[in-house]
Length: 463
Image (cartoon, rainbow, N blue to C red; front, side, top):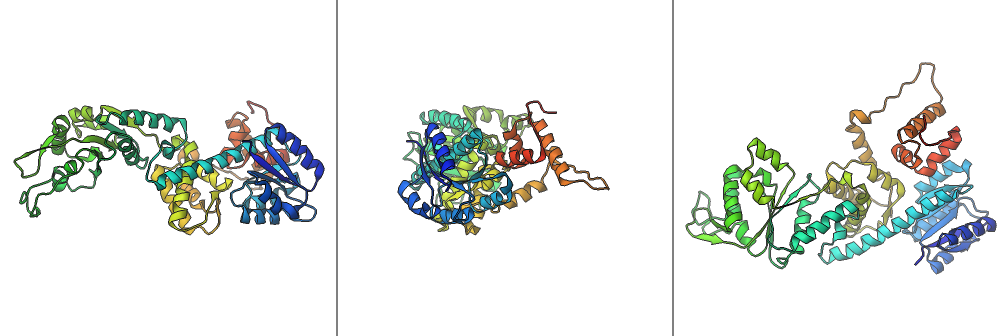
């Protein structure tokens, strides 16, 4: 079904021309020439996107925008404005507009903005479907993201999961979701109805680690309970055990773990009877185990036993197309948890999320969304909600990211500085305006306005 666009503009010539162009682009289009009838038209037509002129004869476009966003929160509204109305356009963005187009409307720019709006709508729809599945406690491949990189990994995970017995090593930075992947492997395996047990090797006191893994008999050591305690391997019998942060395990326990992997048998601490288990072992680490082997801190034979199949999960900064998708899934989660009515993230907020480095990966993104949602009072998140991320980013600036501005004693006009900045950025991006806008933290339409204002004409290989 073609996306539906409603044009609200009391100039029938402009409305008619836009309708013809958009119809040729396979959109279903309706026009509204009277601003006072906008609400009724929206209710009847139920558009996916609204094009709204910022200046209407009988109404203020900004006021109408606010009314629309209050009653139809999820519909992206693209404002149409003249070259002299940039301040008004910025106000529109702050009031909830998805983007704005400058008159005369450039066809290529129109298509870019509308494609972006349609993609945003698809994203929200997919996340809503995902949220429904997660409410049913079932992970799906869409949960991990939509990028081709992550989907290839998920496809490999699904194939490995089917065996039910293969030992899998999950590698990746902290916060990339290794435990969630492990749960997914268990869910997709023949062991799905049996226990899934996780033990974090980094958090167990060394003197208790053997007991935690393999259990102990009464009186096995000072403080041992008055009855037999089952270890994690016995609790996971028939199912799956995840040894998280496996690189933290002591060398003596690595020897005992190797035996369990090879023979599926062990002794409880202080016990004389051998215990047999049928367990699939998954291991996760944020370390490079091969390097640990070369240092002598990890046993080579255990490494090869764990490394039957290896899955390396990429950091979030290497799959930026997943950031907004995952952020929306957390938005839905915390909307429900905190009883908030937040329905989306506007373009200014999205630009901050995409530009941030996410050193803490998905875990950091989740924490950020929880913090933002806890404090949010608006129905749509914007750059103000994520401003603290940019403050953090400024505090950890690398040498390559530093910007040095030198101002002569006699002073300098701001237009000269802006022109030099834009020209330098365009030189870096080889004249690519989309990339330049991204580097400068602007929308492409804002960059184009500045270029026209400053008399900058651009071709490829500028400078």
